[in-house]
Length: 342
Image (cartoon, rainbow, N blue to C red; front, side, top):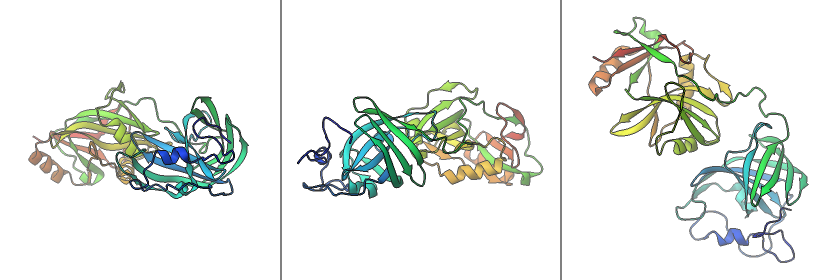
């Protein structure tokens, strides 16, 4: 059993949920808050991972042990590769009923924000001490042998002991120079072979999102700081999925907005060689629309209407992108064409 100064293992009449109850008002939060008394006894084989959109996005790993859920907050999620260890902060024990909890914890309450169940299943214990916990998880999204080991105070690390969950997965690139459009005076004649987008006249920005965190590079592939209020919320919206987005920061209805028009890497798979049409449909499926970011619209085969709309809205022009074109980092060619509105 994990020993903690504030919430020790049950010895005699020790109440393992006292700290949990002290942080929650049962009249204000929808979370389960059991009354005083003996804790229920299970089979010590249930685990749950909850995605917690609190002040900062994190994932809560909870393992049933001795009638409670022993819990760790994992800021970057459960690692899928043994080469990467993630911080896991040991928190107070939770009641067994929490394994099925999902919902909105009200503002002003401890842990305020949205809680969803990211994965759950059963586990086997290989070792359990106050400094090291080895388990085998059997879930839908996460399975395999993991060890949690204490480093300092309540800080632990979580390490995957098995080979990578997806041996073919590739990490996001450190940086990428974006593909550029060639300037042309007229729309292409074979419009059915192209998808058309608005040219927004903004600043090019690539967003690398992983573990709910976001970093940015500019039009030259150089690391830059993201606009205030964009990186964190965008990372929380994407969640655990690693993704590389291409877009531009432009003024939309008087508000600086990140307009996303391409996805270059998703779930461990580079998409550079995929045709533009397939990448755009993958981007649409992500549903990335928020207060400071939007998936930019695109219109297959309808360049004249898009150009007319750009003129009406006072936009600089349109982009024509071949539906079958791959993404060529740093290149400029006729696969992408920029046509001025006037």
